[in-house]
Amino acid sequence: MLVFWILLAAALIIIAVIVSFSHLTVKIFASRVKENDRLYIQLHALYGIIRLRYEVPVIKFKGLDKGLKVQTKGLDEKSSEHLNETKEIINWEKIQEAYRKFKIFLSQVDNYAAWMKSTLSRFKISQMVWITRIGAGDAPETALLTGVLWSVKSTLLGYLLRHVRLQTEPEIQVQPQYNRTLFTTEVTCIAKIRLGYAMVAGLMLLVRTMKVKGGFKTWQNILSKA
Figure (cartoon, rainbow, N blue to C red):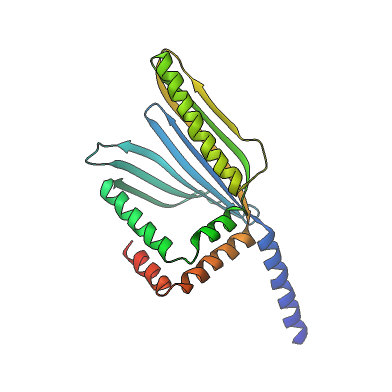
């Protein structure tokens, strides 16, 4: 019997080590071509055993008073089984409510900035491609908009370089389209983190929340009303 428990403990330790050293891979793709918007997120874990995909195939602007119509689909890529499908309208009121809840979440985490910085440092970006084509129908205006976009992208890239590790040279482009009106953009980002680091980060977030008086209970109340 003692041998059985020893073997079982050894097997569990080996499994824990294998799981902790596996990677959680997140791939984000977003594009806007004319009036067509597309966004999807792929999650791969445990050496490809878990493969999930969340896609937003429909994003339609219904007007300032009605907001955005968003359709979301979840898919298990291993079995091709649909996990869920939702349709909703995101308006200004919902954005304000989400922002309010987000601020409450942050207020209930002890030293959130330090936790976020530590977690981001564990991510490795293996691919970063962001290509934008823009034209305002007028050469000077197009040149001005091109400069603005370069500034925005450079700022975001600088933030990434300070907080995450890039394993490859990012491909960042802004292609001016003179004498025509056009805006298209495509973003592809693949990031990896060891599953062990991800689990530790989640545990540390929980610990930091419990350090704040009523923090965990506040989270439960917010999630129960979501």
